[in-house]
Image (cartoon, rainbow, N blue to C red; front, side, top):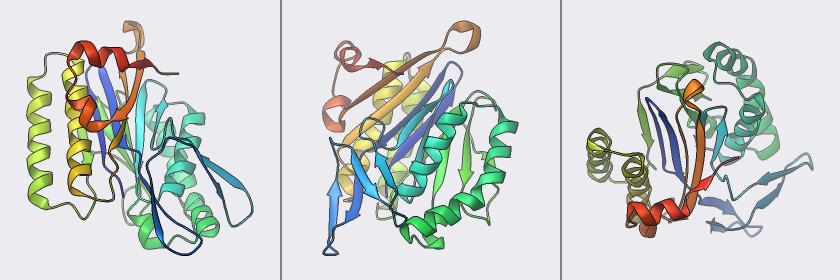
Amino acid sequence: MTCTVTLALPGLNLTAADTRLNLRSTDGSEVKVDGPDDINLVLKSGASLVLPYHYRKLRRIAEGWMAGTGDFVAVQLVLERLHALGTLEFEQLAHFWETERDNLRTLARRETGVTGGDLDQTTILIATHAAGPKVLALHFSMASPAIAAVGNYVITWPPDLQLDVSRLASTNFEQAVNTATDVHAIVKSAIEVVRTAAQWSWTVGPQVQVGFTTGAGSQGARHFYLSGDASSLAQLSDVRLQRVIQNAA
C-alpha cells in the first residue's frame, strides 16, 4: 500500500507520496524497495514496464499533479497514459476514464495476475483547478463512479494504520493548511503526513516525493518537485527547504 496526499487550493495543486514498493522475489518472499533506482518489471506478455524512481507514484499533468494508490502496476499504466493525455479538462478526463477503465483492468489482470479485488482498491487522485479547485478521483472499481470530485484534499492511508493515528494526523494536516501563510508550510505539512504513516506502517517507506504547481493560466504556472527522507525534510526551515526544491519538467 502507500500513503498519498493530494491537495487543490486556489493557486496551488500538490501531491505527495512515499516511494515504497512491496514486491515478491522469485522465492516468494516479500521485498521492500524504497529506491533510489528505477525498477524494470517483465510482464507476463514479455513486455517491460519501467517504474521510475524520480516520479515513483506521482506525475504532473498539465497544471496539476496526480498520484495513485493500490496496485502499483495498474497505477503506473494509468499515470503514463494520463501524463501523455496532458489535459485537466473534466470532460476529456471523464471520457478517457469511462472509455479506458475496463480495458486497463483487463490489461493489468492479464499482465500481472492481480485480482479484481485488489484493482477495486486502486484509485488515481488528481489535484486540479478544472473542477473548482477540487481533487478528482478516478476509481478502478466498477461499483464506483468512474470519476468524481471529492473535495479540496484527500489523504490515503494504508489499511494497517491505527485509526486514531490517521485521524489525528488528518486533523493536524487540515489545521496546518487552514493556518498556513505560505506554500512551504503546506508542503511540510504534506511531508509530515507521509512521515507519520511511515512511522506506524511497514507498508509505507521513509522516502517522500512531492510535486506541486503554483499559479495558473494568466498568473503563470510554475512546477516544483522535491524528494528525500520525510523525517529530515519535515524539520527543515523554509530557507533550507527552498534549497532542495527543484523545478519540475
